[in-house]
Image (cartoon, one colour):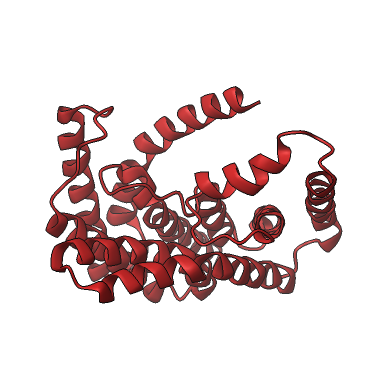
Length: 275
């Protein structure tokens, strides 16, 4: 089972690596965002390409490759600024709510880098606190989005299968009916997604919120394609954070809001055409 998962993950990683620069470039060029947002998107794209190029020259399998701390700090602050600028201009606040766990993940990285740079334990506290509250905010943000989708008019009956599957997996894990599934949901699932501070009781709930959130985003497509596809792209790799030397993980939230900008621009043009 895990062998197939790794193959799927490798293919997905490659596709995302290729698609992210394209999505950022299209969004910066035609997206319905402010000049500041576009400038930040272009800057994020250029720095990401430079980082990937240097990493490629050093060898993508070179795990010892790490950019200077100052570069890493500037890069992640730029990504955060890009996210906030684009979402603020589009006024799609529900996307920002869903992005809170990702912003906390950025914060844990910044805290760690500032700790290395300054030696001040205060920054270590930021990293620790960000990791501790992260799983709680995943639950809160995911639940908030599900409520938003339901209030937006998604078909509640079609959401029931996702809830039923979540309950089924929870029962299978609890009674250990499928050996190995408990480890996958309880250990592998949070670890691969980069979720810090997970308590013993959290994995089934995180799985349930995540699965129901994906279903809600899918069902929201007819009501609001921009938010639907943006959130789906975010959920597909939410909180998959490694180190800054692999931009795929760090760019997932920026790619999500870039997709939001592109689709919002298309929706705006279609609305103007109908009028």
